[in-house]
Image (tube, rainbow, N blue to C red):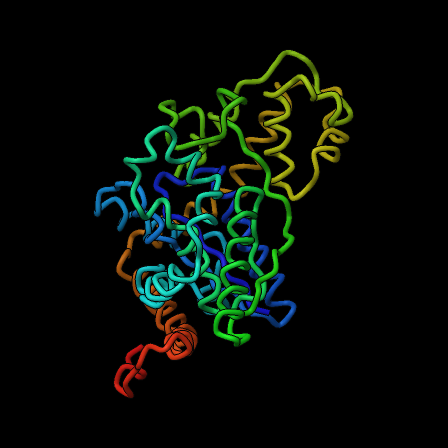
Length: 343
């Protein structure tokens, strides 16, 4: 069993990033290890180039994301953690697979339509073609399983289509067809000021999100001031149907405690937010505080974080090189002995 997953390097990491993605990776690492499998986690800095970003921002965000992952529990000794750009086989295989993928397949990708909006002619080729790079990210390691959310299912289907066509075209079962990995459903964390919008770094209000680097007092204050309503908490989730503010805070409590919204409501039913929000604030501080402290210690030595990423990239390159060489030879590309060693 080999699991591969990537995450784009975003800055100003917040509670939504942690509960929605980072913590899921930690759980996955442990589950896969328990089954005797192998996990590769990469920071998708090449995917970060599909839309303009200042070079210093991208570099900084990559180190910050790595620090957050390690602080949250990703162990570079147990898993392979690296940034995508340091394994050039990702880019090389992507180009080879561009000659297998069909334009019609890419035209059906809904995420390009969503991200490009009305400016499709002005969008980068990278934004259009990044599903093929995503396929290369997975196929390069002959991943058996890939964790996917609802928005990524189409991309995994494309990956399987590309692998199938390659195997058929070249009459070889070279690529493994990866299976979707069923994991714990990530909670949808909404803004603390507007429960109709996801928690996001783009919101101009600092009160709308809890940043991973916030100190304990700031975390507690943000939850105490979070938007709520005047009613007491019900005894079941059904009672939150028309109460988005309450539903968001209960969802966050359940996620942080490793519980369920129903269990949270069973504990707090009949109580108002004057009691619930301080309890939520204490739980958030207890959970996020140690992660923040580890993350800040790591960021005090960014060179060491870079060293850990490079060590992971070396391991990833060792896995990727034989597969890429096999693909090149299968496609008729003549590879010298020197080239084979360098690939």
